[in-house]
Image (cartoon, rainbow, N blue to C red; front, top):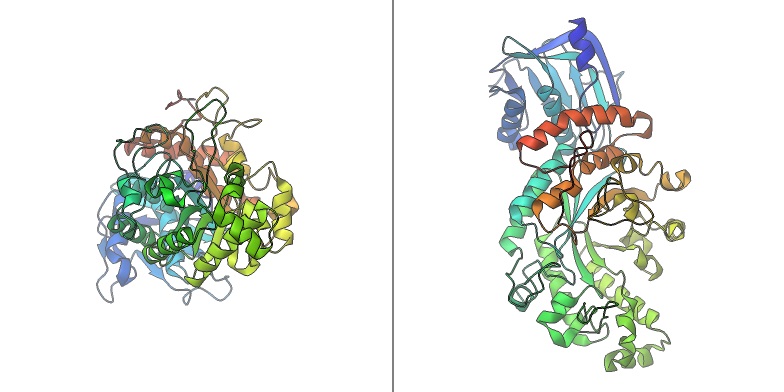
Length: 521
């Protein structure tokens, strides 16, 4: 018994809980044991626990002793602190294991911890054993996110749902869905069918005019939103404006505001921006945002990009609508035009009942601080972050280094980005406690962290998996676990146990222990 308890006390769970105490007693779970849980999730909970245990468990009849119970905080002894919000407590006694929480989210995260514990539990004569004790847990950050770029390369419904399953297992709760950009428009808008008839064709790697169309129907969007919601993941849609607009302008050329030709290229994103002052552009985007709001009713945030606009590469000042706007408003610079556009579209998003999300450029656009969320991505511009926090904007930290997963993760890798270095799993794990000023990382206006997978160099799903895993697991512990509980050596030991499961489900991850060969484009 002592040997078994010592092994289990290491608790092979990712992310590591806030506090774990064990005793020498042992809880034994037998096949057919009863489980009591909420009626709304009975089927899913029983199925998940049975799969983790390796044998069937049963829903408890009325007034029958249960081996596993999901209860509120009421039965917790008075001397123990009660979990709040997304937190949970697991009390393990010789006859009963109880998961306490104040919310469905708390019970769900307690379930994820219990699943991993059962998968790692000691087995004897067909039963599983866990050490008795108490697990107390609470997330460090409320925003624990991952962004997937679907414009440059398309993933599809099955791949997104598989990703959501992994996010849920590791307690990530925000899926930032980058649905539109220059390479392709990926969301059906009923009012503007050419967006998917024309704008969804091709990708970053396939610019043929007759390339296959790749997009999500509105029914698929609803299905994925519901799928995420069942896993307590909120999907944040992103519709880029006024830049990154080539796919939309290809479908509706009358909305174009000019673009740029990349150095040495003759055909790269010549219609990068919308015309920001044209009434038809504003009507178009108002309508698009209205349909997006209906598809993502619980998103809380609609992200409208706002980055890398560069004023149509100086072509805005040639547009009659822009000239008229500048004269009417007394503007003297194109920066004022962009700020006017951002305020106009932000107002539309707020009127729809959502907070405005945008990349850190929008922190300089005079948007209301109580209704705007800044996504800080320019790691080489810490002053932008400091200024946004000083101005009282809430911020999500997602800097290119170390939170962009299109950067390579090992020095031997060649396919992917570098910027004065790359993003190994250690750097992801230690963020934000290293990588930025510690006093900034502790600012209460920081809502959390997220990683971003831009897909220029991830043409295949195998490549996307390779760039995402296992860094996604390091992200989860960085976002959930308190700094005092983080230990990279412990994490790597627990990670080693997770990799066989990823192999079983066909995920093409990078193995940092074997330094597996790079999966290229």
